[in-house]
Amino acid sequence: MKLTNQDEQGQVTTSGYVYTGEAFFEPSPLHQDRQFTGIVHAHSSRLFYLAYQITKNREVAEDIVQEAFLKLWQHRRKIIPGNPGGWLHKVVSNLGYKHIRR
Image (cartoon, rainbow, N blue to C red; front, side, top):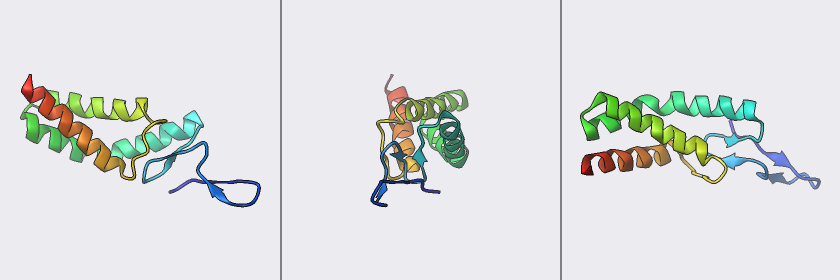
């Protein structure tokens, strides 16, 4: 589902929304929660698998996935990924390898 606005001339705009590739994060907190929950459900298992493959530790993998989703939520107004799954994949990879380097 992609959400857009129309300006006075009927032109489709994205003002007030942040494009995620799957949807825009709407300014409304209720809609943001629903959209974010959908992204979490769509990507959690794959991200956990990736984090576990890197760290070989279930608890650490869960923490990494949670941190990746937290980063997405905290930066939802700044991040404009065309593919939230790809963006999250990169964040999880980076966090996983950072954990291994410690």
